[in-house]
Length: 403
Ligand code: NAD
Image (cartoon, rainbow, N blue to C red; front, side, top):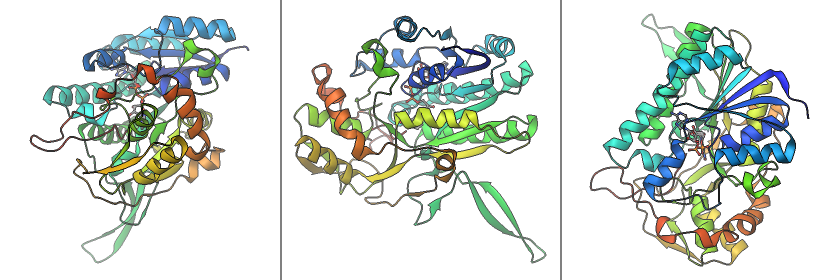
């Protein structure tokens, strides 16, 4: 396949769980891809004494294998986006990318709450990286479209029966003269962790650079990503994507999968009535391609899309995995400081209108159990599954990375 030199895309955070399959997908679609990463995620694995359940190769091996399997090359630049500003400006000025996809943030809520060091790291890494990218695009004098991976978590959980809109809320403001004006405002953010706080702050940075510099930005408010493999990462085991199951980076779904695969009961906290939004990794990469292919018009405000395809209550998720795997379900005390039951209604019409055809959990779950959780269960350390992060001193531990 020929690479289109006019269609350079920078994939920032391209060594991560969402970034790696996105880089491969875009490369296969004919874009010239450059991955930028500082490999901090691999260093965090070392800090936590954990490893991806799936055996992930070094970036050098991954890129060599991609070339062997497809004849396509992907460029790589090691940069810390929160610090290395000048090289970033040079890269953007030299490559004049059509789009910059920004995944490069510390993304686990429990990790962000472990200690004041982790809080400070998450704030300075995430907010500086986002601001540096925006400022670098301005300095480079290019009109690249920024596509950022935000999170459904900025809305907080639950919407009191209201459908969560795509980023903006219609409000009526009473004036002193008795009249009322209608306005659209950013949906008020309600972060539940320092990580979510940085994602909420990102929204203001985007609104500002869009207003001040006319920057074209799409912010994808993503649900919890599940699944491991995409068509591209399945081409060879050396291309395999990461699967996090530890208490900091693993999501509730991955915890249930690992409990089932290692012969443990599935531990549902409280009544399991908490509702969460989900999307399969293959749909994540397709959504990013759809967003790149349909950039905002010049002068358009930040485009916000809710990137999720279905919602589940935790107990229903456990029941589905129990039915598929035969593992028993156990209801245990809920260690989290949260409502026992919540509803979640989410508007996601924009990506569906652009042509997204979702993969649903009920379809993909068996493959996830047999091809990943059971296949690599021998690499699992069950002691790493529970979360050891505390939101507040003296408070209960929080489970799972609700990204
Ligand atoms: P990840 O941790 O697997 O990948 C992030 C990548 O960014 C890593 O390779 C890391 O090394 C890199 N990185 C972090 N800080 C960097 C810096 N300062 N400079 C250069 N590289 C840096 O995370 P992920 O699961 O792939 O998530 C990607 C993005 O999607 C995140 O911003 C996250 O908030 C968002 N998101 C993820 C999920 C999910 O379920 N995984 C859900 C919603 C939103």
